[in-house]
Image 1 (cartoon, rainbow, N blue to C red):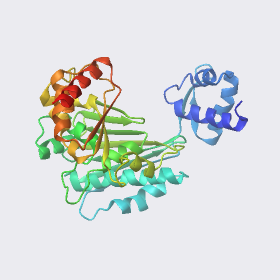
Image 2: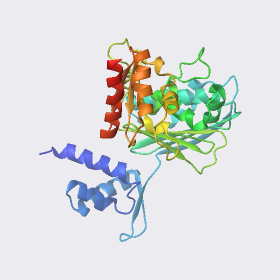
Image 3: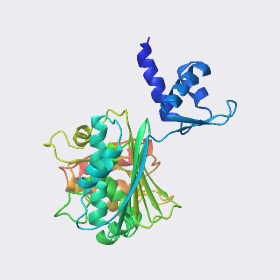
Image 4: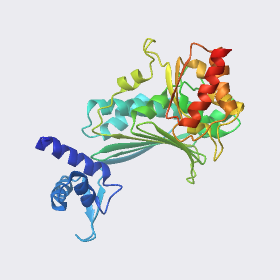
Length: 346
C-alpha cells in the first residue's frame, strides 16, 4: 500500500500535468485514474486555486480549469555581433524563473544558450524575441528570429534537394554549417533534455517529445524565420549529464559517438522506404558515429534495395560502425536478415 504522502504527490502531479488536456473533466479523469471520488479530487483543485496554480471559470456544473502562469515575460532585441547569450541568461531569463530545481535550471540554461547562439550566429536575421512562461508543472520558452529559416538555410548550405531533408540531418546530430567554430550538437542534445522540443520554420514543423517521439508535419503557421519552443517539467529528474552520457557508446570515452535516428523522418508524405537513393540519404554522415540506433517505429515496410544498401553495402564498407535496429515488424526483420545473410556469405 502506498504511503499517503507519496500518493498525494502523485495525485497533485497528475492533475497539474493533465489539466490542459482535460480542462472540463479533470476531476472525473483524475478520480477514475486513482479510484477516488470526485469530491476528493476537488479538494486538490481548490488547493491549487488558492495557491494560484490553477484558475477556474464558470459555474460548478460547467466549470473549466486552466493553468495560471506564475510568470510570463517577452523580450525582444536586435541581433548584433555584441549580443551574447550568457548575458541574456544572466540578466533577462534567469531572474524571470521562480524556484526551479537545480537540474531543471541547468537544462534551461543549456537549451536557451544553444538556441539563442544559433539565432545570433546562424539565422541571418536582425531581431530576436524570447518568450518565457512558467507554470506550476512546467516552464516553456520560445526563441524566435526573423532570419532565413533554419531548414531553408541547411538545405541551401548542404545542397539538399528538399528542406524536409534538413530535419532528418538535424535529428542525427553533429550538423553544423560552421564546423570550425561549432560542434553541431546543440539542437540534438537540447531536444533530448526538454520534454517537448519544437522547431517551426517556413511551413515546416519538427517536434521531439520525450521519450523519443519524432515526427515531421506540414504546418499552417507562417513563421518568417525560425521559432524554437521548449518545455520542461519542473519535477523532472532528468539532468544534462545523463543525456550526454546516453549518446556516448560504451566502448568510447565520453564523446558524442552514438545517435538515434527515427526513420519516419526519412519519408516524405506517403512514400515507402524502398530505394537505394533513400537509403543513401539516410546513411549520410553515419560515419560521424560509432553506433547508430535505427528506429523503425511507424514504418510498416521497407524494400529489398533499401535494406541491402544499409545492411550489406554500407555495413561491408564500414565494419566499425554498429547499426542497431529497434521497433521492427516481421517484414522489416526479414528484409534486414536477407541483406545481412548476403553480407556473411560474400
